[in-house]
Image 1 (cartoon, helix red, strand yellow):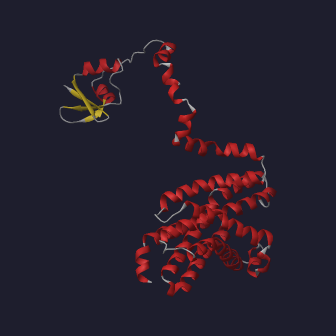
Image 2 (cartoon, rainbow, N blue to C red):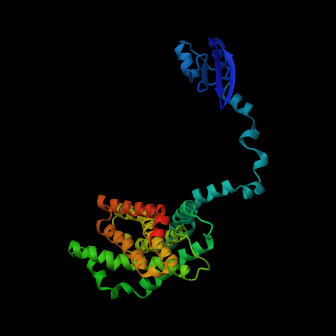
Image 3 (cartoon, rainbow, N blue to C red):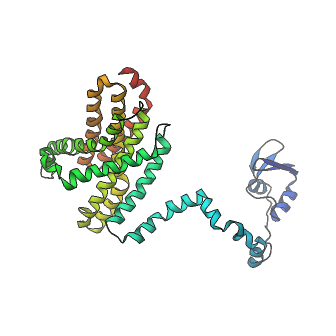
Length: 341
């Protein structure tokens, strides 16, 4: 029986089984190559040899040193590629190097201080930002605007919380303690923490919309909302690193440090993305702006508050998933929502 050999879309043959065996032994045909028989059956060379009970013995081309020499030094260390000009112009190499080596350099040159935590948080937030940019970018999205929003929200939270300690004037904030009842904690985390933090995160997005020179697409503003949420999460995470987390025992501290720099900024971004979605529609439909402003705060605040109550429990993780699902559903139904309001 005659067989055709196919590899990467190219076909060779036909060959009988003995010819295939010889070619396999010499390395010209691979055991992983495909075989097409006269009846159009497609299997691997390994399978067809096994079917005919044919054993192969692939030959070695000399000893190890001889094989390495035959590869050639230029194949292992291409002279033309090892130049500063090539390294500088190779965007893929630069991107891989930055993503892979940045944490090591940050730890080395920031001496395990608050700057270390902030630098690593910036590293992870940059990855989240690139991910969001790939998913939500529109022709209106401007990187400079995103960077502006990212740092503006951090300045806002620093001034309001770290300098003025505005939480001390919020009576609902006092309900979040473990000694309070479940209902009190839900109220405290939702209206004391959730509403306040969602207002701070959406503030730079609101200012951007207020002074925008053209109507902004909801997807554009969702992207900016996501970036604002990451910025807030980064600052909050660093503050927790140098205060609360530093007083915990190692295992719990390690877990929370990782969470504060990766997952929790993501959750903050999802909630502020929802805020930005409704905020965008409030500027597209200004006659209904007040109701849309309330929705822009209350929906993410409820998700935020309930998550803070249940945190890492299964209920908390389910609430996190609900937030992500809502954002995706909102974006899918943006046109329908626009026509109905």
